[in-house]
Length: 318
Ligand SMILES: [Zn+2]
Image (cartoon, rainbow, N blue to C red; front, side, top):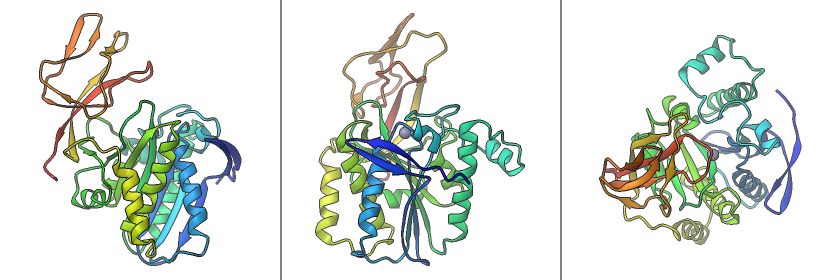
């Protein structure tokens, strides 16, 4: 394993980081594995983990389990790029994991080397966990958004998300495959991804911190976080909540074709209500209309990427 250590800017600080950001707690009990920097340009999660773990190691807290935190794509984080060769959050597929098992994954490619290292860490964590394993994957977005969670539809995942006051999106399978959280869920563990807001907003750092504290509490790993502290973290996460429904299922993705001149109509915010027949975007052939009543999710307002928009619908977990 590489022992890479380097400095990265995180908002107005410079942090020295390596694959492992921190570890706290005791053996036995549940384990929560936090992952920041699966996308190398998303440093808010890394900054928040660094802060929380400094505090956790201050001797003021009591534990009934273990918290471990790592950086997902170390090389991309060093270079402040989303990824170099492949999106680290799209390569956790059966095919690539099998290539890894049969030792034929081409680890000269940055993300395949990263996949192997994170995979080995994950196996180690699984082998050393006697209780339940939770994996929390911290992200930020290019466009402004209210914070949200992405997870799968299993009872254990939905039950974990109830600790956090924000929209929860499930039903990614077939739309977004090869995500780290779907891999973790397929192994029978509880995984979720948290999107805290825009990459360079200092609010994303604050919200990540609160999310990490609530995770430490609700997984039972840290047992001495006080009632007022928990309520404060809840308030930090709740303030931007605007939807009346918290559970949504992904029902449609508009995939942009090669050469298509896709342009999202202006003014759409994440989770805005839309109606069947409503013009959402245009391309060289004219308007693109919504096939469904629902809510718009992740409308594309930058030039990068081939997901024009998604549509989500309220799910029955409320
Ligand atoms: Zn991300």
